[in-house]
Length: 173
Image (cartoon, rainbow, N blue to C red; front, side, top):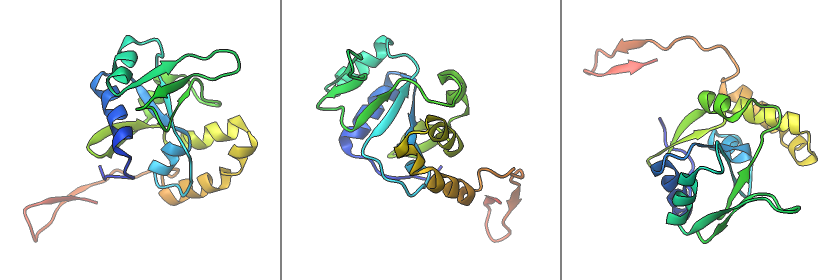
């Protein structure tokens, strides 16, 4: 697994705390697309949690000086506190399956030693298409182009292990 885009120390602390406390979450939206190499820009990191009522979530957030603020009135749910920026809480993903199904098909990437589960580029695109918001429409072609360039939309042939006669290593082709 290759290392990808670096995150700030505060962002890494929050993500590490969630992982340490076994909180199930996915990085979704344009942040997930950017982590897969799509040339997109976003101001936040969208997190989709399996269970916002999970006591482990409160413990993990408290450990980094953050907390969960449930939705009220017209305000969406959010994370608050010193350790919570620039994270946003996502409560549903248009056009996708439920959390357990998407979690099962998520991609694992490594960032600063953390193994993070992220929504695949195909699923980010499906969600943006289904949401059909003006801001989502602006990035659809970029996501489609990124998907074509990544080769993930093509059926993959199994990779074969071959011995390299110049060394004692086995290479994956």
